[in-house]
Length: 454
Image (cartoon, rainbow, N blue to C red):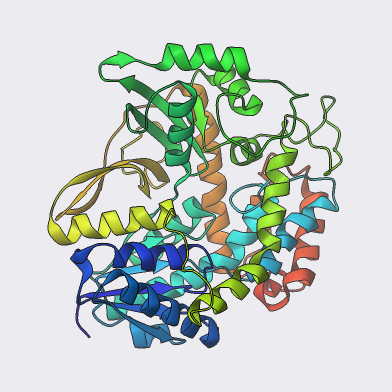
């Protein structure tokens, strides 16, 4: 197989895959390349290939789209491998939200941190490491780019176990910067930012318009517009967000990417003022809109597939082209192939001193230079002590989660849950884990109480 090959594992991703195929077809850099679409659901892979062929014809691109159910058939000689898998699919994500809710734990997303993030990690990591081992065997020089959440923990598992060149991508910081730029009255691209941290809790360290510090203006707008615990429900980002404003007042820097993500890293925002559980239909701090958006997204998968089938058959217009995730992957691949360097706002990769007051082994989200040498993360210096304390504790919890996922050790899985600020002790953690085992079946049954730890 030619190295002019891109392999997408988890090609049934209803939003990402059409965006990726559209963006690949929109540049002549990848003319003559083959895109291998891998999914356990053969019908999903074939449908995506048909959509891709239609996109290529419309865009005048010389791209071949080949469906597969066996990734080892697709991998030999690949230049880029992308993982967008969802172990347990939409039903699994729903269970990750609904099972902890039985114990009074509200989550706004439940795919990165919180008990839902831990449960998702326990399912995803073994499969992602198995994929990584196949890549190491059949395409050892490939650049692996993971999108599956929990992004930080998953990339840590892949890099720790396989030795591959692997990074994680998320468009969250880009979206935050775009919204803040608009709110502060600037045109797109006029503000330059430096973000650093962990995925879904990444902190704005510097914000400039040319050489002028724009942070004072950001603080002014946040002070004027942000609410508090009684803020109205919202799912839109911007300077009005109350949790982000509260965190900036506490730690001195503005967090990304939006309240629905950053709130889950802390114990208090998803509870009432007295610390008691809250009604999941009336969350404080304006967070209800974020949770509702998550549940809508989980529920709309069937509708998205219906539209994709129509697109494959030529009965519906082709998908829109505004998927930031896909744009970034194509820009990175293009920079590596052409050798034309460019700077990425945020890439998730092993720390190795880029943030010196976080564990060296942690996967961090930092700026990166991309070009012929690959993806090179940039050092940003030490973070403020309070921020580093929050992130270091989370990185250590995720390290335990990685070990639990890869060994099947129930005691480590319980530790990972107990260490989450949303979980109120071992009794709650045990109940969540046992109910999750019932909900997810074979995907988690190695953690059952009667299992002997590996």
